[in-house]
Image (cartoon, rainbow, N blue to C red; front, side, top):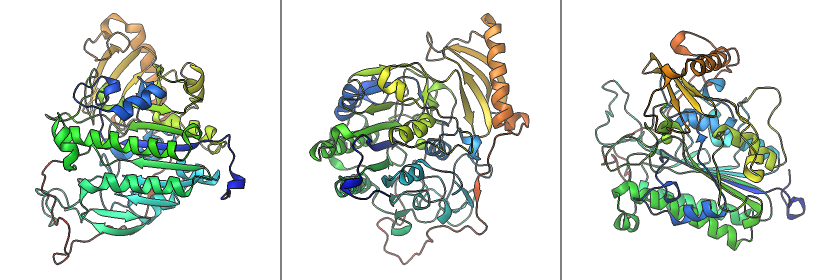
Length: 468
Ligand code: MG
């Protein structure tokens, strides 16, 4: 593997992929927010390309992240549901199997130095952790920041949910802290990223930075809270913006600006709650297959290669990043299995049209909607069948159901849906997909931590009750 200056191929870029947690479509200045000031992200968009029809593979965390890392819609890799649950919880026996070639593995095998920082959420058993998926180094929380000991959570194994063990902070696969000060984490994440970029400035590197913000509970630093016009949520958005500025300034300082592709996006839409985020002008929120649950901000910056100030309205997905970043890095995805992503480098650099005719909106293992360039057909909601058609070009807010006016469009999209069902399944109709690969599973799972009443935790119980 290349590890020296001599081996650096100057035609291949470094890659920094930033993924936020539950940041909504309308939460950034460059996407129309009047509540949040995001000068660094606005600058990134002004110097690069901003997507307006960019989708995650799922409206919830684990499935969305597994899809991002493998280029596959979640059901294809067994990530539709997790033993019947919508996301992974501490100590579950399932996760992203080593047989799947993650983006980290793909780029590591192509000679990149690889770092993952932040929220993983693709399984907390040793087989499933980032260091077993091609990342040379990992620093972060293995799952959501509301899956620790927190006020209001049953912690004695009582109630419907088992209690969560102390929230682990991992360095590679070692728990280095339990119940860490959450307000400090974004700063620590940035430090890890900058140090890694400096150390690897003479070789190609891939950084996957997955923020803990803006997932609940939100603990922020005072300096961001004081300036916020939207409470803790606004402060968390400002923290993300600050982190972006830190990365961009360091790239410039290292002389790597023109040699680095930076991608910024979010794992799913914002929650529906007061003092929270915005998915406007879209309808719906995290956990739904309305546009607001799955259409997210996405900005890509590569000075000299991507035209500054571009806006791309073409249909593109997070799964596309897998083959796209692979091709930019001079490698290709495995050819022994199907993926859903397509190389969208021509969209980024040449204004090409979308390679996708359709997109499928899955929530867990249920196919809930399909769209083409213009129309979106809703098929199911809360497990019940629906037939609703929306014109996404004229009505991106999905306000007027026009199914009865366009029966031919409904039948066309129903045929598209049936094709997805046959390949990737639809649990609502009892259909098992022919192309579904199994989720990873271990025999004797254990949690990464165990509560010890005598341990001097920073916070034995986080004192904010919010979860999300
Ligand atoms: Mg999320």
